[in-house]
Amino acid sequence: MKLYLVRHGQTAANIAKKLDTALPGPPLTDLGHEQAQQLAEKLATEPVEAVYASHATRAQQTASPLAQALDLPVERVAGVHEIVAGELEGRSDQEAIEQYMTVVRSWTRGRLHVPMPGGETGEQARARFTGAIAGLAQRHDLTRSDGVVVLVSHGGLIRMGAEWLASNVRPELPDRGLIPNTGIIELESGADGGWQCLSWVGMPL
Image (tube, rainbow, N blue to C red; front, side, top):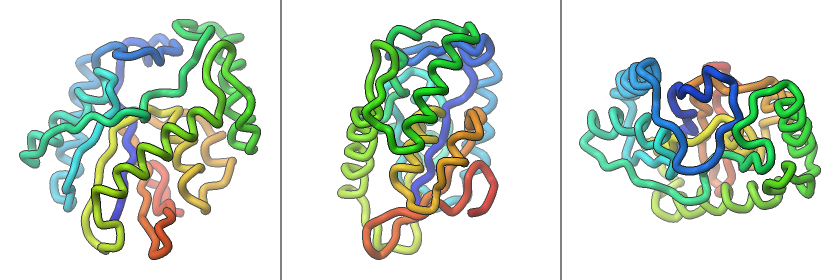
């Protein structure tokens, strides 16, 4: 079984490079809707059996064209919303961005006790994300070689989440920067119930 972790399409906050993590969040821009349609076309021939999304408006709007094309519902999943920025919410200044990235780099190195200023710790983010994925795993037969589950989530979280799930994702990958809008991290379940990363936004691993 494969799990595609997909970042949502473009929003106005993305254009402004603003830390915008609160729910329900902004809608997609016109380009974001185009990206969502292109995602649906890209995955149209994949054996997708379920389409999930976070509770954020942008994630649900990104998932919708794919779900409609496959005659599937968009199922909302708790726990896969963006990393909570806390006191940095709504800011786009260089100081805030550097603070955010410093915390994320701490998490990639295993220092999960470090919190976002006024926000969540890596331990909290990891627990909610891996718990949500475990819930999806219970709903689908991960031992099968075919079948794809799509989860539309958020760039910061899926960068970290892929490292938390897959043993072959090293810290250098999430450290490289943002996942592009509608970029895909492709994971595959192993016989032991663990995950391996097959590709990172088109780059094979």
